[in-house]
Amino acid sequence: MCLPRTILLITALLVSQSIFAQGSAFGDAATADDIQTVFWAAFPDGEYLPEGSGTAVEGEVIYQQQCLACHGVGGKDGIADRLLRHTADEIAENPKLKKTIGTYWPYAIGVFDYIRRAMPLTAPMSLSNDDYYALTAYLLYINGIVDESTLIDKTSLPGVSMPNQNGFINALEGIPTRYDFANEK
Image (cartoon, rainbow, N blue to C red):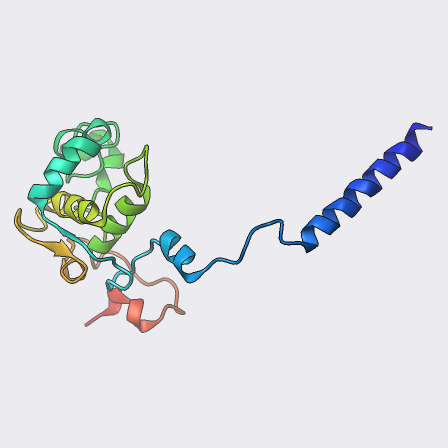
């Protein structure tokens, strides 16, 4: 007697699911503006970088307010201290320190793109583009890659030469030449 009721209930649920699936109960199609607000990628050549600018001097102030708790003073000695180049002795003691901004990242745009998407940890994507450019300038500055007064924006950032820019190889043959910076002459 219980089995027929169970079959009836399951049939009713399946029919109701198919009815809801055919309607517009799952939202509306995304508009171009909707996509732009969530498409936060920037390519190594600077394509899709947003408007804005900042210097290391401005970035240091933002760093003190937004980043210090996790990343420590000057990007060192925090719980997430992979921001600053470390000495060989420090790396031998803690191998995770080998991959820092100054020793691992091949493109400065990757630094900007990452911190814009993921930081601050408690509120990702909550800062302005000017703030993210300034933070990028500060991180590049403390790694000895740019000067303190260098203005970082969508025009200058692609031209920043990272110490490990040639440390990667193109393992995928299908990548368009436009994005194959490792083999650039």
